Image 1 (tube, one colour):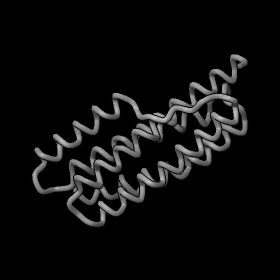
Image 2 (cartoon, helix red, strand yellow):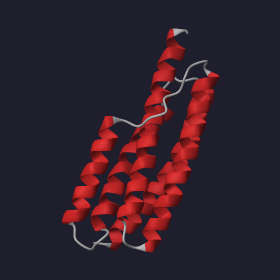
Image 3 (cartoon, helix red, strand yellow):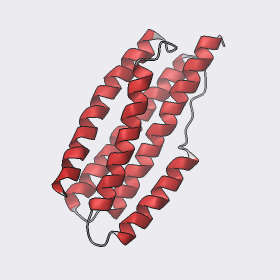
Length: 150
């Protein structure tokens, strides 16, 4: 595999890992949320992120490589922290929403950086740019929800 394709595969796999962390984070948030509105939203977001990961995995396969299919250790650690924050937070969904918004910040930043990375093939950059727009809208919705708690 040429060096540029190897770089693209590594970058795309990193995005897959982050996206799978997001799936797991949303599933955990749905479990911890008390408000049915948030439970429903988080479950829907988890499914949306599964589709996003599938699209990224298809990009990696298109480059002739094997895509990653697991989240990171960091992601597992963050979910454990989320559960602990929820226990300390009492009956409010605020700690869950704050953790979700933090994760949204991370995934948006990572996709924005990748969308501008000239080391990726143009088709992959365009696809990531499209994904990044949807992620930004989802982030903004979570941010608005978090502000409801201020």
